[in-house]
Every structure is written in C-alpha cells, then in structure tokens.
Image 1 (cartoon, rainbow over the protein chains, first blue to last red):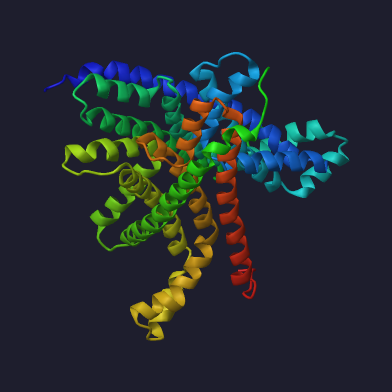
Image 2: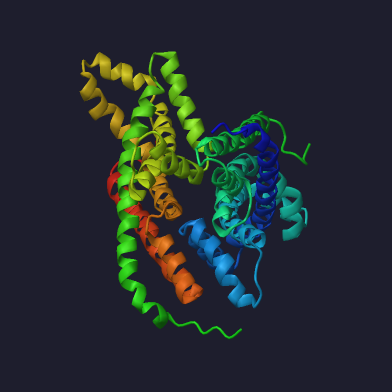
Length: 222
Length: 224
C-alpha cells in the first residue's frame, strides 16, 4: 500500500520540463502569429482586417480541445502524413495562442498615440521602420504584462496534449497513477506542480508590470 | 489527398449531436449559475474584516486561476470515490467546472466591488439606507455596470471549458466529435460541425450581451 512517491519525483520533474518546453514553443509561435494578425487588424486594407478578425473570433469561440483533436486526427488527412502528438499539440496551442496574442498586441499598437505615427511620417519613415522603431517598442510595455497571462493560459491548455497521447506532465501523472494503487496522490502532485509553475510565472509577471508602469521610458527608447 | 469533404456522411450522427449539444448547454448554464454564486461568496469574503478569511478567499482564487481545469476535473472525478462520494461523470464535471470558474467570477466581482468609491457607501449610510437597500440601490447598479462585460466573457469561457468534460466521460459536443470522428474517419466534417455548435453558442452569448448592454446602458451617461 505504501508507495514510495518520492521515487517518482525525478520523472515528474522531467515531465514538467516537457510541459514547459511545449508551452514555450507554442507561445513563441503564438507571439509571431499574434503580431502578424495584429498588424493585419490595424492594416489599411479592409480585406486583411476582416481576415484577421474572422481568424481571431473563430479561435476564441471554439474550445482548444477540439482544435487539438482536429490537428491530431484531421490535419494528417490533409497533409497525407501523420503528425506526432507533439507537433499536433504545438500546432493547436499555437493557433489558439495567436488569436489571444493578436488581441493583446492590437491593444498595444492602438495604445500608441496618433502623434507618434505623424511624427514618424514627418521624419520620412516608412511603415515597417515606423512599426519597428517607434510603435512596437512603445507598445511593448502595454503588451508584455497581459502576455504573461496568455502564457499561463497556454501552459494550462497544454494539459490537453495528454488527451491526444503526448506524454507531458499531466499524462505522466495519470500514468503514475495507473501503475501504482490508483490513488489521488499523483493527481494532487500534478495540481501542486502546475500551481507552483504558474504562480511563479504570474508573480514574475506582476514584477514586470511593476517595472513597466513605473514611469520609465519604454524599452528601446531610453 | 483523396479525401472528399461531404457533410452527408455524418447525417446519421446528428441525433446524438443534439443530445450532446443539450448536455454542453446544461453543463455550461449550471456551472455559470453555481460558480457565480460561489464567486460572489468569495468576493464578499475577500472584503471581510477577518484577515484569515480574506487570506483564505484570496488563496482560493489564486489556486483556481493557476491550476489547469483538466487536473481539477481529474481530482474531483477520481478522488470522489476514495472519500466515499459516488459522483456521476456529469456531477464531477459540473463540480470541477464550477469550482474553477468560481475563482474567476470572484476576481471579476472583486474588481466590480473595488470600483465603487468608498464615498458611495458613506453617502448611502448617511442617507439612512439599510444594508439591503444600500446594496440594492447604490452598490449593485454600479458593480453591475463594471462586471457586465467581463462576466459575459467568463460565460463564454465556461462554455468553451465545458468541452473538457469529455475527459471525464461526459458525452457532450467535444466527446461527440472525438467518437464520431474516430468511428467514421470524417474528421473535417465533425470538426466543422462541432466548431459551429460552439461558435453559435458563444456568438449568441456575445450578441445577447451586446444587445442587452446597449439597452441597459444607453440611457445613462457613458462618460463616467
């Protein structure tokens, strides 16, 4: 009856690393996609604006779980080759995260005053240079704090990768539970580990928010 | 790619879809109502004069916001029997979903209550309003206005989150998609149909929220 739970700790810690890696990768892709979508949303061309809006609204209105199923079972039918659970999970999480990130980035871009655009134009800067040198650095202070929230959401959503058979933290906990007496110690351990990870990240986020709103100049402009 | 998209292949499963959609709806509505009740309690506790109670309520919110729903669902589902609670899949999912959502509801309500200036409470008291009157006539209308939009978002979050109930064997829409997809191999069609169900539910909530919001808040000065 007495299982040596501590002997499973290294396994769980390694699995936590897997979860972090999966979430981080998905977040990275989500940021890239989110910036692209936000640029489309704030674009001059109506077609681009509408396309980005439809993408964002679509992914914000369907559960990540069915995106996950679709990317694991459906996308291979389209590609003609199987996706690994890791690739499918990353894809699903990134598709979802980019929709959330696009809202965050758009809010950031819109928070930069009209005058900045006009001044950049007066200096003769083109769109891309204005974006890169003037707008995005200032938008960053508005973008970074909520991005931490998006990352925590991605981390929590990454648990769903266990459902398509990717062995990350949740799946590891479930497997340990099955191979032991089926008690809920492994599940409790899961909850504690996720909480520890997410809570540390959210504390880090609060610290960032503090720094960014302390009236300092935006990064890159100092 | 020799895959022909045809919705006809999933006609036979549409009866099950109706039941699945009804389950999704029932689960979401119940979870919203219950979590709103629990969340209100917790938001009130966070303003309690007793420090331990405040800390406890704050801890609840942090735990729920930082623990994945799937893990909470597994704990409720699997731990129930080991403490002598026999829960059906639906009950377990409802409890897990409500406990989780309550953390977010509490946070929304806390922000709503915090947005009411202290002077409003003092003015109400100096007018001689009773506790109930103060809440009904002064506090609630102001809180309601602040929480209105985030509450609508939380409703949508709960609908989307209810899809995780499929992991504890509730036959709702996500579970329908998984089962029908893997028996018929029509993943595109099932995905599209399941996505549409959620899309319609979420956008309906959204439109109702916007419509009621316009009707309610139009008459008042918006430049508060």
